[in-house]
Length: 305
Image (cartoon, rainbow, N blue to C red; front, side, top):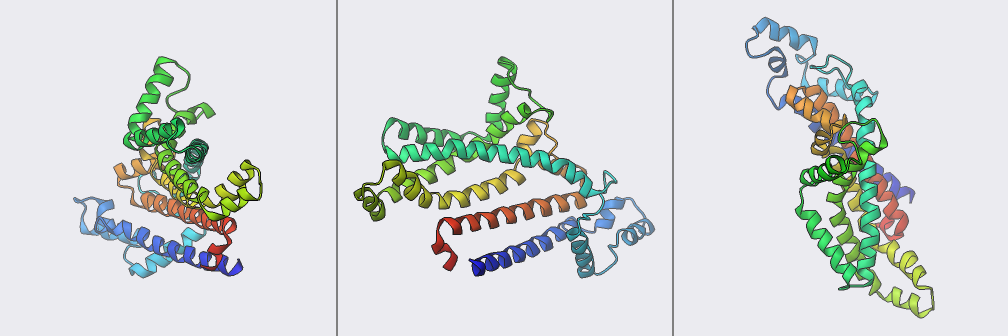
């Protein structure tokens, strides 16, 4: 297990370094960052002055090394637009995105895994058809459209939930459902397919022949093996929720990382965009690393592959 842990940790560090290099290069994608800051009408003297102030006159490898060392220590630089410390801005926005993503993935897993198991136990039954129909509808509906439907009924017609803001736990219900519903079909279908395959395997027939209780066979032997790909998919989807919640956060006016990314793109705030991509990428790497460890715990064969 220790060898597996070190191997996966090494891969995670390499991926993080690669992501940091790509992220750092973002600031040069739009051309000379000094010209972008000074504006097209700025004089050569003004551009050179900005280049010296922000250190853009140094070799790129030196800039990258300095930026990476400061990022490791929690210093992500200063926002060109807000004129404030980026780390402090992200600290205030990140909790809202984490809460939203955790609520959304919890909603998706609580709905999709039991439904996938029930559909696999009774294939071609009414609940199986309902689950497959829900999956088709869920994949066909864009999350922003579903969010607008929720707002119309839950807030405008029935006045049960607030539309915007983050002042109460009620503010996160509709965004979490809208974001999680989009993930539900994939997790449900994968759970159903995994359970169907596992339930037809020899060791499940052996367990039934030994006289084990149906619930023990189902949850202790079958679901433990069928859930392994679901864990990997859930980790990927959770990372998607962290970085891909721009639309949902914008619709519900949630001051999270997605909304901050949208604001930064509009303002051409390149250091802020750099920091957002780096932070969310690191979260994604950590989540997939933890998912690999959980899979190795569920299936010891993974540790030797």
